[in-house]
Length: 166
Image 1 (tube, rainbow, N blue to C red):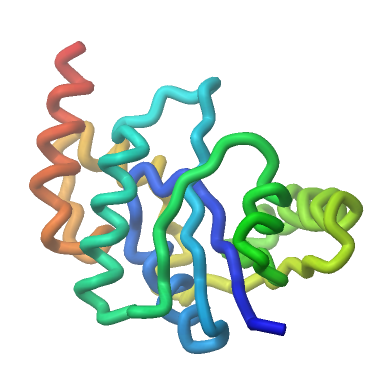
Image 2: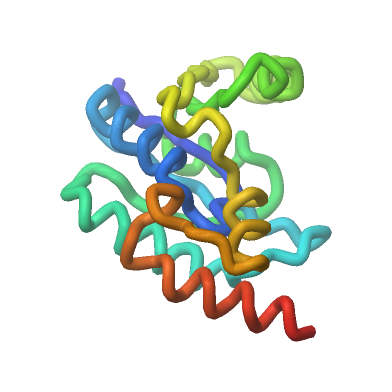
């Protein structure tokens, strides 16, 4: 059996915390799918195609050749089964993340018995970081250095300014 993992999320935008989990997962698994959830009930800052592009550029810059970016809608377990993955990766920043993620892991296991969820603790230096915080900092013109890939900073700031004008 191949060792294939799926790391799902909104990645709106991708942060250095996300990339830390992706890089560490890429060392453990033969292939890692970074799966962007298409959620029609949310109003993301970036379109799915923009998020795919940002992730692909960031992953390529790190030389992670066994990582593939894709999007999905519907149930995560359907995407996991389609990709013949056997592990779902969930990043945890704090204990507060665990309760919700644990419930989701149990439900995913009930729906797809052969798939396990692996919880990866984020590195300490990113434990406070989320896409929501990045968007908030960008919205008010704060410094994004160290929060997101350096080459994405101008795009994120430009979009935050556009969204802020609306």
